[in-house]
Length: 220
Image 1 (cartoon, rainbow, N blue to C red):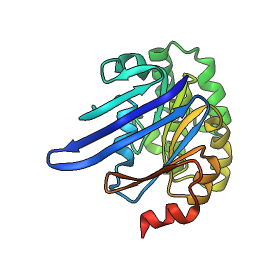
Image 2 (cartoon, rainbow, N blue to C red; image 1 turned 45 degrees about the horizontal axis):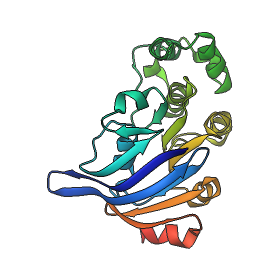
Image 3 (cartoon, rainbow, N blue to C red; image 1 turned 90 degrees about the vertical axis):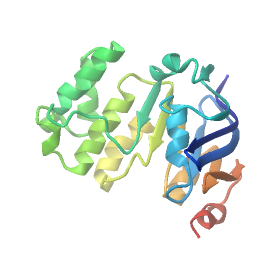
Image 4 (spheres, helix red, strand yellow; image 1 turned 90 degrees about the horizontal axis):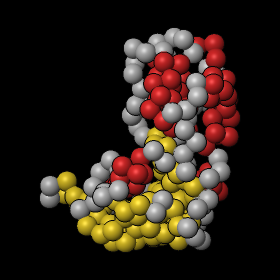
């Protein structure tokens, strides 16, 4: 089954076109890497796939469900990691993850396993507002993968992480079906089965054989 099918998908904010004419298909188990300069439409695309934004044109299907009509069926199957960590700053890391565990009916034992995996066991009961940016990002990764989603939607997942923290997090985000927004050209291409390049909301290329030169030209 195709995990993602988009046909001429577009979105505007008032008169400004944020995304236009996106057509692609991602098979189960594949990684779509999305590249483009700031304002190219990457985050808009990710939010449409997460059913957080409605497309204004075209057709979108995620995990067999038509968006936005069946967005309710998609949300529980998707792990979304955006610029906002979606954490309550006055709660501890453990309390945040246990809150999401209740929503997804996930055993609390999973919370402890993830905090251990990302190296946060010793800080698990400290409020998130006392955390560094990297620690917040690690906690947000735990939230995104807590319910073992069928599809991961990742916007710069390693932002703010030092090499050691990245090594903790990377295994949790590997494998399965993913959409990965990245400014790291080499790492993004290495992970990709399909590469989407966006420029000013429009598709510059969508290829399985895109090169580093193709990607770097988006930022010129």
